[in-house]
Image (cartoon, rainbow, N blue to C red; front, side, top):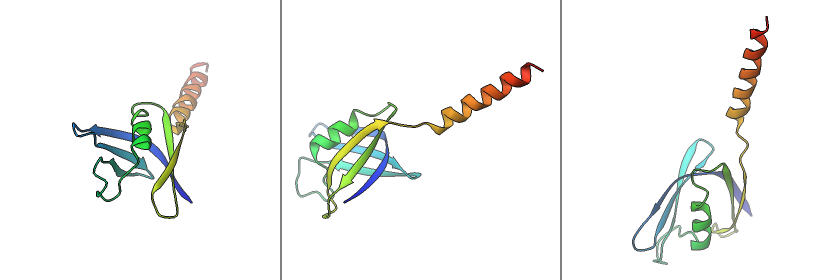
Length: 101
């Protein structure tokens, strides 16, 4: 079983029920799609696509697990660690210390 870890950056929902997801993983965007048309290649399970769509514009990261056949089997959600926020906090602390001198 393999997995990829990232964050949902965009969601498109269509009148026919299809859902497209832009998934950010290792500096690239991967597009996943759920379609009510089972003949579409790379069809993503509806339940997983809907769950991932709810994480848009949140600090929730998603790990997608794939079975040996390459199809997604389940997802895990967790709060993202934001390295940029940590760096910003450190910069503010450095500025505060320099103000004291």
